Amino acid sequence: MDDRTAVLAANARFYKAFERRDLRAMGECWSGTAGDACIHPGWEPLYGNTAVMEAWANIFATGVPMRFVVADVVVQLLGDIARVHNVENISLSDDGEAVGRVAVTHIFIRRPEGWRLVLHHGSPIAAEGEAAESEPEYH
Amino acid sequence: MDDRTAVLAANARFYKAFERRDLRAMGECWSGTAGDACIHPGWEPLYGNTAVMEAWANIFATGVPMRFVVADVVVQLLGDIARVHNVENISLSDDGEAVGRVAVTHIFIRRPEGWRLVLHHGSPIAAEGEAAESEPEYH
Image (tube, rainbow over all chains, first blue to last red; front, side, top):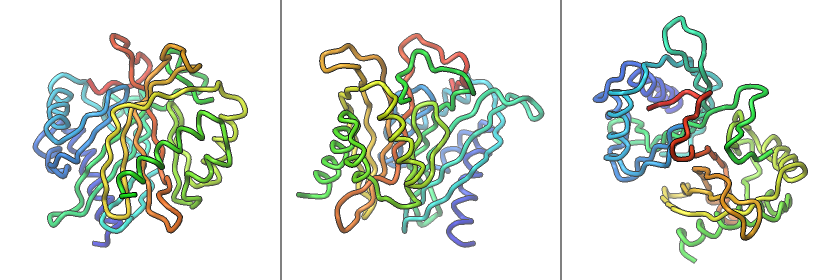
């Protein structure tokens, strides 16, 4: 498997773990180090694997199950680092309408056991015509 | 200047260019390649230096001038890649109250001329008690 394919597989594994709310599988997506960081939509940044995994545990325990249609996937390989961007089209069931879209940055690092996440950063994409009234706007 | 200090200086240069609405200085912060990407709060991802710089031109031409108090800066060096996270506390004048907070991921690459941005990803941090009603929530 070439690097690009391996990174795409790691990216897909993340979404499978997220949809299944499988904390063990989610844990295996990450580097497991203090370098792990996660910024969920609307959240403060979380730093370190412990904080990141606590948040996933809370999300899986109390959040609404979600389905992801991942689109516009862009991969850039930078040696032992890989960067992925994609857009999550989120729905609440397999045949449900999309309830929101999130723009994502993933950073993976190459480890002996494969490509592992050190960053998931997701930010809501405003619906067309929707002003983010309470948020600072850059435009 | 060691790598960490140089990366912090590059990060500070970005905010200086942003505050001054100085398009030329902003251009010099970026790698200038097709690998440049920018995700502004609420926006779709922008890919490639041309699209990224067009957006800065529009933001500087039509947006509201902003002041940044940059906090919680985290730097991770990964060889010729550096990753920075910080929180932008945004106000509309030098002594104005903060109007919003944005969680940021920056990726810099080492170039002969110095550390250059290949990613700015900013996502609004919801104010306390504020539900992002129209956005998917992970919690």
